[in-house]
Image (spheres, helix red, strand yellow):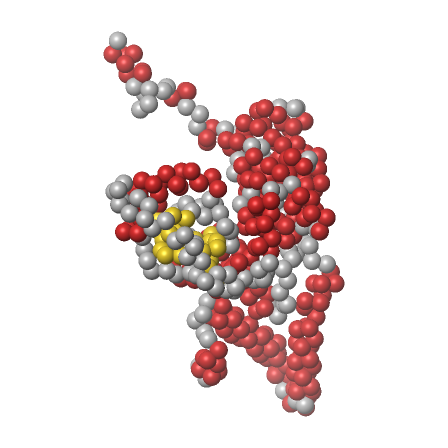
Length: 381
Protein backbone atom coordinates (compact mmCIF):
# COMPACT_ATOMS: atom_id res chain seq x y z
CA UNK A 1 0.00 0.00 0.00
CA UNK A 2 2.84 2.39 0.87
CA UNK A 3 4.50 1.50 -2.43
CA UNK A 4 1.32 2.44 -4.29
CA UNK A 5 1.10 5.73 -2.42
CA UNK A 6 4.66 6.61 -3.36
CA UNK A 7 3.92 5.78 -6.96
CA UNK A 8 0.89 8.10 -6.99
CA UNK A 9 2.95 10.86 -5.35
CA UNK A 10 5.50 11.01 -8.16
CA UNK A 11 4.15 14.38 -9.27
CA UNK A 12 2.73 17.29 -7.31
CA UNK A 13 -0.57 17.28 -9.17
CA UNK A 14 -1.15 13.54 -8.97
CA UNK A 15 -0.02 12.81 -12.54
CA UNK A 16 2.57 10.23 -13.36
CA UNK A 17 5.72 11.27 -15.17
CA UNK A 18 4.85 9.34 -18.31
CA UNK A 19 1.57 11.31 -18.60
CA UNK A 20 3.36 14.65 -18.80
CA UNK A 21 4.08 15.94 -22.30
CA UNK A 22 7.44 17.69 -22.12
CA UNK A 23 8.10 20.27 -24.84
CA UNK A 24 11.76 19.29 -25.07
CA UNK A 25 10.84 15.71 -26.06
CA UNK A 26 8.96 16.82 -29.16
CA UNK A 27 10.56 16.66 -32.55
CA UNK A 28 11.41 20.09 -33.88
CA UNK A 29 8.93 21.39 -36.44
CA UNK A 30 11.19 22.24 -39.36
CA UNK A 31 10.46 23.21 -42.95
CA UNK A 32 11.17 19.66 -44.18
CA UNK A 33 8.96 18.07 -41.52
CA UNK A 34 6.05 20.39 -42.30
CA UNK A 35 6.32 19.57 -46.00
CA UNK A 36 6.47 15.83 -45.24
CA UNK A 37 3.33 16.06 -43.09
CA UNK A 38 1.55 18.01 -45.83
CA UNK A 39 2.53 15.43 -48.45
CA UNK A 40 1.31 12.65 -46.15
CA UNK A 41 -1.95 14.57 -45.60
CA UNK A 42 -1.41 14.56 -41.82
CA UNK A 43 -3.37 17.78 -41.49
CA UNK A 44 -4.83 17.10 -38.04
CA UNK A 45 -1.43 16.24 -36.55
CA UNK A 46 0.19 19.25 -38.21
CA UNK A 47 -2.53 21.57 -36.92
CA UNK A 48 -1.90 20.36 -33.35
CA UNK A 49 1.86 20.76 -33.78
CA UNK A 50 1.48 24.30 -35.10
CA UNK A 51 -0.75 25.28 -32.19
CA UNK A 52 1.54 23.89 -29.48
CA UNK A 53 5.04 23.90 -30.92
CA UNK A 54 5.47 26.95 -33.13
CA UNK A 55 5.63 30.70 -32.58
CA UNK A 56 3.99 32.86 -35.31
CA UNK A 57 7.23 34.77 -36.03
CA UNK A 58 9.14 31.49 -36.53
CA UNK A 59 6.40 30.09 -38.73
CA UNK A 60 6.46 33.23 -40.89
CA UNK A 61 10.21 32.70 -41.47
CA UNK A 62 9.69 29.06 -42.41
CA UNK A 63 6.86 29.89 -44.82
CA UNK A 64 9.21 32.16 -46.79
CA UNK A 65 10.69 28.99 -48.30
CA UNK A 66 7.29 27.53 -49.29
CA UNK A 67 5.54 27.88 -52.61
CA UNK A 68 2.10 29.50 -52.65
CA UNK A 69 0.20 26.20 -52.57
CA UNK A 70 1.93 24.81 -49.48
CA UNK A 71 1.93 28.20 -47.75
CA UNK A 72 -1.84 28.52 -48.14
CA UNK A 73 -2.36 24.95 -46.89
CA UNK A 74 -0.38 25.65 -43.71
CA UNK A 75 -2.04 29.02 -43.20
CA UNK A 76 -5.52 27.52 -43.37
CA UNK A 77 -4.64 25.10 -40.57
CA UNK A 78 -3.97 27.94 -38.13
CA UNK A 79 -6.49 29.29 -35.63
CA UNK A 80 -7.73 32.83 -36.33
CA UNK A 81 -5.52 34.52 -33.75
CA UNK A 82 -2.36 32.68 -34.81
CA UNK A 83 -3.15 33.24 -38.49
CA UNK A 84 -3.50 37.00 -38.00
CA UNK A 85 -0.28 37.23 -35.98
CA UNK A 86 1.66 35.12 -38.49
CA UNK A 87 0.30 37.28 -41.31
CA UNK A 88 1.61 40.43 -39.59
CA UNK A 89 5.16 38.99 -39.52
CA UNK A 90 5.23 38.07 -43.23
CA UNK A 91 6.97 40.13 -45.89
CA UNK A 92 4.91 42.03 -48.45
CA UNK A 93 5.33 39.43 -51.25
CA UNK A 94 4.06 36.60 -49.04
CA UNK A 95 1.12 38.69 -47.90
CA UNK A 96 0.15 39.51 -51.46
CA UNK A 97 0.32 35.84 -52.47
CA UNK A 98 -1.89 34.88 -49.54
CA UNK A 99 -4.39 37.64 -50.19
CA UNK A 100 -4.74 36.50 -53.79
CA UNK A 101 -5.27 32.88 -52.69
CA UNK A 102 -7.64 33.34 -49.74
CA UNK A 103 -11.38 33.87 -49.92
CA UNK A 104 -13.12 37.04 -48.79
CA UNK A 105 -14.42 35.35 -45.63
CA UNK A 106 -10.91 34.17 -44.70
CA UNK A 107 -9.50 37.66 -45.27
CA UNK A 108 -12.29 39.12 -43.18
CA UNK A 109 -11.28 36.90 -40.25
CA UNK A 110 -7.66 37.98 -40.54
CA UNK A 111 -8.52 41.68 -40.72
CA UNK A 112 -10.82 41.28 -37.73
CA UNK A 113 -8.09 39.69 -35.58
CA UNK A 114 -5.18 41.94 -36.57
CA UNK A 115 -4.28 44.90 -34.39
CA UNK A 116 -4.91 48.27 -35.97
CA UNK A 117 -1.27 49.38 -36.27
CA UNK A 118 -0.31 46.08 -37.93
CA UNK A 119 -3.23 46.48 -40.34
CA UNK A 120 -2.06 49.96 -41.33
CA UNK A 121 1.49 48.67 -41.89
CA UNK A 122 0.17 45.95 -44.19
CA UNK A 123 -1.98 48.37 -46.20
CA UNK A 124 0.91 50.79 -46.68
CA UNK A 125 2.96 48.06 -48.40
CA UNK A 126 0.24 46.66 -50.66
CA UNK A 127 -0.71 47.71 -54.21
CA UNK A 128 -3.88 49.76 -54.63
CA UNK A 129 -6.01 46.87 -55.92
CA UNK A 130 -5.04 44.67 -52.94
CA UNK A 131 -5.75 47.52 -50.51
CA UNK A 132 -9.20 47.97 -52.02
CA UNK A 133 -9.99 44.30 -51.50
CA UNK A 134 -8.77 44.31 -47.89
CA UNK A 135 -10.78 47.42 -47.04
CA UNK A 136 -13.84 45.89 -48.68
CA UNK A 137 -13.80 42.94 -46.23
CA UNK A 138 -13.12 45.18 -43.20
CA UNK A 139 -16.03 46.35 -41.05
CA UNK A 140 -17.03 50.01 -41.27
CA UNK A 141 -15.79 51.03 -37.80
CA UNK A 142 -12.31 49.60 -38.28
CA UNK A 143 -12.15 50.99 -41.82
CA UNK A 144 -12.82 54.47 -40.45
CA UNK A 145 -10.02 54.05 -37.89
CA UNK A 146 -7.64 52.83 -40.60
CA UNK A 147 -8.39 55.81 -42.82
CA UNK A 148 -7.77 58.12 -39.88
CA UNK A 149 -4.32 56.62 -39.19
CA UNK A 150 -3.38 56.67 -42.88
CA UNK A 151 -3.87 60.45 -42.92
CA UNK A 152 -0.94 61.03 -40.55
CA UNK A 153 2.53 61.69 -42.03
CA UNK A 154 4.60 58.54 -42.53
CA UNK A 155 7.28 59.49 -39.97
CA UNK A 156 4.88 60.69 -37.28
CA UNK A 157 3.68 59.09 -34.03
CA UNK A 158 0.16 59.06 -35.47
CA UNK A 159 1.14 56.61 -38.20
CA UNK A 160 2.88 54.40 -35.64
CA UNK A 161 0.22 54.26 -32.93
CA UNK A 162 -2.64 51.86 -32.31
CA UNK A 163 -6.05 52.75 -30.93
CA UNK A 164 -6.37 49.35 -29.23
CA UNK A 165 -5.67 50.33 -25.61
CA UNK A 166 -7.32 50.13 -22.18
CA UNK A 167 -8.89 53.35 -20.85
CA UNK A 168 -10.39 53.80 -17.41
CA UNK A 169 -12.42 56.54 -15.69
CA UNK A 170 -11.04 58.29 -12.59
CA UNK A 171 -14.09 57.58 -10.38
CA UNK A 172 -14.09 53.85 -11.12
CA UNK A 173 -13.41 51.51 -8.22
CA UNK A 174 -10.52 49.07 -8.60
CA UNK A 175 -13.03 46.23 -8.79
CA UNK A 176 -14.89 47.92 -11.66
CA UNK A 177 -11.60 48.70 -13.43
CA UNK A 178 -10.53 45.05 -13.34
CA UNK A 179 -13.94 44.02 -14.68
CA UNK A 180 -13.56 46.49 -17.54
CA UNK A 181 -10.12 45.11 -18.39
CA UNK A 182 -11.54 41.58 -18.48
CA UNK A 183 -14.31 42.69 -20.85
CA UNK A 184 -12.01 44.52 -23.26
CA UNK A 185 -8.79 42.51 -22.94
CA UNK A 186 -9.21 40.81 -26.34
CA UNK A 187 -9.60 44.18 -28.05
CA UNK A 188 -6.42 45.70 -26.55
CA UNK A 189 -2.92 45.17 -27.91
CA UNK A 190 -1.42 45.43 -24.42
CA UNK A 191 -2.73 45.76 -20.86
CA UNK A 192 0.54 46.45 -19.04
CA UNK A 193 -0.39 50.12 -18.74
CA UNK A 194 -3.94 51.46 -18.45
CA UNK A 195 -4.73 55.11 -19.15
CA UNK A 196 -7.18 57.24 -17.20
CA UNK A 197 -9.29 59.66 -19.22
CA UNK A 198 -12.34 61.83 -18.60
CA UNK A 199 -15.56 61.77 -20.61
CA UNK A 200 -13.89 63.85 -23.36
CA UNK A 201 -10.96 61.40 -23.59
CA UNK A 202 -8.55 63.94 -22.07
CA UNK A 203 -5.57 62.14 -20.57
CA UNK A 204 -5.51 62.48 -16.77
CA UNK A 205 -2.94 59.87 -15.76
CA UNK A 206 -2.02 56.22 -15.97
CA UNK A 207 -1.48 53.14 -13.83
CA UNK A 208 -0.12 49.64 -14.29
CA UNK A 209 -1.96 46.37 -13.82
CA UNK A 210 0.38 45.73 -10.90
CA UNK A 211 -1.01 48.83 -9.16
CA UNK A 212 -4.55 47.57 -9.75
CA UNK A 213 -3.82 44.12 -8.32
CA UNK A 214 -2.17 45.53 -5.20
CA UNK A 215 -4.93 48.06 -4.47
CA UNK A 216 -8.04 47.43 -2.40
CA UNK A 217 -11.20 46.62 -4.41
CA UNK A 218 -13.09 49.67 -3.10
CA UNK A 219 -10.34 52.20 -3.80
CA UNK A 220 -10.82 54.72 -6.59
CA UNK A 221 -8.69 54.74 -9.72
CA UNK A 222 -7.98 58.45 -9.26
CA UNK A 223 -6.45 57.75 -5.82
CA UNK A 224 -3.75 55.37 -7.09
CA UNK A 225 -3.08 56.62 -10.62
CA UNK A 226 0.16 58.39 -11.56
CA UNK A 227 -0.72 61.96 -12.54
CA UNK A 228 2.71 62.73 -14.02
CA UNK A 229 1.75 62.75 -17.68
CA UNK A 230 4.45 62.06 -20.26
CA UNK A 231 3.08 61.82 -23.77
CA UNK A 232 3.77 62.69 -27.40
CA UNK A 233 1.75 64.51 -30.04
CA UNK A 234 0.28 62.80 -33.06
CA UNK A 235 2.69 64.73 -35.33
CA UNK A 236 5.81 64.04 -33.22
CA UNK A 237 8.65 62.39 -35.14
CA UNK A 238 8.58 58.65 -34.56
CA UNK A 239 12.33 58.59 -33.87
CA UNK A 240 11.77 61.05 -31.01
CA UNK A 241 8.98 58.81 -29.72
CA UNK A 242 11.32 55.79 -29.66
CA UNK A 243 14.00 57.83 -27.86
CA UNK A 244 11.49 59.02 -25.24
CA UNK A 245 10.30 55.47 -24.62
CA UNK A 246 13.90 54.39 -24.16
CA UNK A 247 14.59 57.36 -21.88
CA UNK A 248 11.65 56.74 -19.56
CA UNK A 249 11.67 52.91 -19.89
CA UNK A 250 8.07 52.93 -21.11
CA UNK A 251 6.40 49.82 -22.48
CA UNK A 252 3.82 52.06 -24.15
CA UNK A 253 3.73 55.77 -24.94
CA UNK A 254 0.41 57.69 -25.01
CA UNK A 255 -0.31 59.83 -28.07
CA UNK A 256 -2.52 62.91 -27.74
CA UNK A 257 -3.98 65.45 -30.16
CA UNK A 258 -3.92 69.26 -30.02
CA UNK A 259 -6.54 69.30 -27.25
CA UNK A 260 -4.75 66.78 -25.05
CA UNK A 261 -7.17 63.96 -25.87
CA UNK A 262 -5.80 60.44 -25.89
CA UNK A 263 -6.07 59.08 -29.43
CA UNK A 264 -3.73 56.07 -29.26
CA UNK A 265 -0.56 54.48 -27.89
CA UNK A 266 2.78 53.45 -29.35
CA UNK A 267 3.90 50.02 -28.16
CA UNK A 268 7.48 48.94 -27.48
CA UNK A 269 7.61 46.49 -30.42
CA UNK A 270 6.94 49.33 -32.86
CA UNK A 271 9.51 51.51 -31.06
CA UNK A 272 12.13 48.77 -31.48
CA UNK A 273 11.37 48.62 -35.22
CA UNK A 274 11.87 52.38 -35.46
CA UNK A 275 15.18 52.21 -33.59
CA UNK A 276 16.38 49.41 -35.86
CA UNK A 277 15.44 51.36 -38.99
CA UNK A 278 17.17 54.49 -37.70
CA UNK A 279 20.31 52.53 -36.75
CA UNK A 280 20.39 51.03 -40.26
CA UNK A 281 20.05 54.51 -41.76
CA UNK A 282 22.92 55.81 -39.59
CA UNK A 283 25.16 52.92 -40.61
CA UNK A 284 24.42 53.54 -44.28
CA UNK A 285 25.23 57.22 -43.89
CA UNK A 286 28.50 56.37 -42.13
CA UNK A 287 29.39 54.22 -45.14
CA UNK A 288 28.61 57.11 -47.53
CA UNK A 289 25.44 55.44 -48.89
CA UNK A 290 22.12 57.21 -49.34
CA UNK A 291 19.61 55.36 -47.08
CA UNK A 292 16.85 53.30 -48.65
CA UNK A 293 13.68 51.87 -47.09
CA UNK A 294 13.72 48.71 -49.20
CA UNK A 295 15.63 45.57 -48.24
CA UNK A 296 18.82 44.64 -50.11
CA UNK A 297 17.23 42.08 -52.45
CA UNK A 298 14.18 44.26 -53.15
CA UNK A 299 16.33 47.19 -54.25
CA UNK A 300 17.10 47.25 -57.98
CA UNK A 301 20.66 47.37 -59.30
CA UNK A 302 19.99 50.84 -60.68
CA UNK A 303 18.84 52.10 -57.28
CA UNK A 304 21.84 50.50 -55.57
CA UNK A 305 24.10 52.36 -57.97
CA UNK A 306 22.14 55.59 -57.56
CA UNK A 307 22.44 55.43 -53.77
CA UNK A 308 26.21 55.00 -53.95
CA UNK A 309 27.39 56.87 -57.04
CA UNK A 310 27.21 60.40 -55.58
CA UNK A 311 29.63 59.74 -52.74
CA UNK A 312 31.79 57.50 -54.93
CA UNK A 313 32.29 60.42 -57.31
CA UNK A 314 33.25 62.70 -54.41
CA UNK A 315 35.72 60.11 -53.15
CA UNK A 316 37.14 59.73 -56.67
CA UNK A 317 37.59 63.51 -56.84
CA UNK A 318 39.43 63.55 -53.51
CA UNK A 319 41.61 60.67 -54.71
CA UNK A 320 42.40 62.63 -57.89
CA UNK A 321 43.48 65.59 -55.75
CA UNK A 322 45.69 63.24 -53.73
CA UNK A 323 47.22 61.92 -56.97
CA UNK A 324 47.95 65.48 -58.16
CA UNK A 325 49.76 66.24 -54.91
CA UNK A 326 51.84 63.07 -55.25
CA UNK A 327 52.98 63.98 -58.77
CA UNK A 328 54.59 67.14 -57.35
CA UNK A 329 56.89 64.93 -55.29
CA UNK A 330 57.99 62.60 -58.09
CA UNK A 331 61.55 63.87 -57.90
CA UNK A 332 61.73 63.23 -54.15
CA UNK A 333 60.34 59.72 -54.60
CA UNK A 334 62.84 59.04 -57.41
CA UNK A 335 65.72 60.23 -55.21
CA UNK A 336 64.55 58.21 -52.19
CA UNK A 337 62.53 55.18 -53.45
CA UNK A 338 61.85 54.04 -49.86
CA UNK A 339 59.40 56.92 -49.52
CA UNK A 340 57.00 55.14 -51.91
CA UNK A 341 56.50 52.31 -49.42
CA UNK A 342 55.02 54.77 -46.90
CA UNK A 343 52.29 56.06 -49.27
CA UNK A 344 49.84 53.11 -48.87
CA UNK A 345 50.33 53.16 -45.10
CA UNK A 346 49.62 56.91 -44.85
CA UNK A 347 46.58 56.70 -47.16
CA UNK A 348 45.09 53.72 -45.27
CA UNK A 349 45.71 55.38 -41.92
CA UNK A 350 44.03 58.58 -43.13
CA UNK A 351 41.03 56.65 -44.44
CA UNK A 352 40.66 54.61 -41.26
CA UNK A 353 40.99 57.72 -39.12
CA UNK A 354 38.28 59.48 -41.12
CA UNK A 355 35.99 56.43 -40.89
CA UNK A 356 36.48 56.21 -37.13
CA UNK A 357 35.84 59.93 -36.64
CA UNK A 358 32.68 59.95 -38.76
CA UNK A 359 31.38 56.85 -36.95
CA UNK A 360 31.85 58.41 -33.51
CA UNK A 361 30.30 61.74 -34.53
CA UNK A 362 27.28 60.32 -36.37
CA UNK A 363 26.56 57.82 -33.62
CA UNK A 364 26.95 60.55 -30.99
CA UNK A 365 24.43 62.68 -32.87
CA UNK A 366 22.03 59.72 -33.14
CA UNK A 367 21.95 59.11 -29.38
CA UNK A 368 21.88 62.85 -28.57
CA UNK A 369 25.34 62.91 -27.03
CA UNK A 370 26.45 65.51 -29.57
CA UNK A 371 24.29 68.51 -30.50
CA UNK A 372 24.60 70.99 -33.36
CA UNK A 373 25.77 73.62 -30.87
CA UNK A 374 28.79 71.38 -30.10
CA UNK A 375 30.19 71.88 -33.64
CA UNK A 376 33.18 74.01 -32.64
CA UNK A 377 33.83 71.90 -29.55
CA UNK A 378 34.07 68.78 -31.73
CA UNK A 379 36.35 70.51 -34.24
CA UNK A 380 38.86 71.54 -31.58
CA UNK A 381 38.71 68.33 -29.54
